[in-house]
Structure formats: C-alpha cells, structure tokens
Image (cartoon, rainbow, N blue to C red; front, side, top):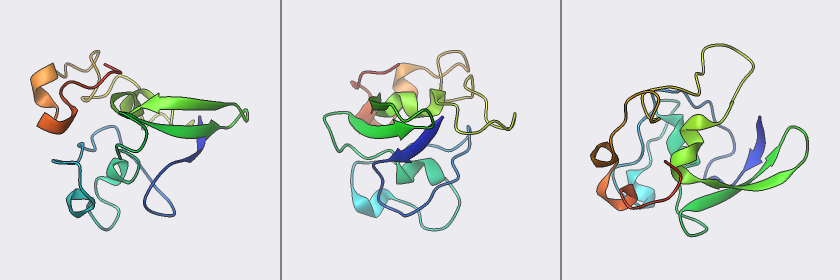
Length: 104
C-alpha cells in the first residue's frame, strides 16, 4: 500500500475510476478532490514516480501502474478497475502522452 509518493499536492484520495491527465503539464491537473490520481500521475522519473510503501520499502512505480496499486484496505479501490488491462483499458484509451509508456 503506498504511503508517500512523488506528487504535486500534499494529499490524495485516488479512485479506480480517476482518469489520467489529458497532457503532461501542470495545467492539466485538476484542483479539488475529483480525479485525484492526477496528483501522482506526473512524468517525473522517465515514465515513473518513486514511492515509499506501508512496509517501508521504496520502489519505482510506472505511471500506468498507479491504477493497480492497493491504495486502501477498503474494498472501494479495485486493482482491476477501468484503467487496468483486467478492467478492459486498451492502449489507445490512454492520453497520447502516455500511450507508449511502460507499466501496462
């Protein structure tokens, strides 16, 4: 479970249905609590961000893999949501700036 991650905002409440930012720019980020995944979906380390997990290990997280993290113990966040292969996302569904990224 992610504990601390690279982000542009001090907190986040991502949902499995949050959509990726339409382009790689700070102006593409949404204020407020809607689409909170965009707080973490930043191309900071060549298609990835870094994170510290609840067990204190540190790892690289591919941006497309953000939707497969276990963000909460609560069952409301499914690691098989609409932005995962298991949930039916196609490569062409991703914004153009992410289409060639690793982590599917």
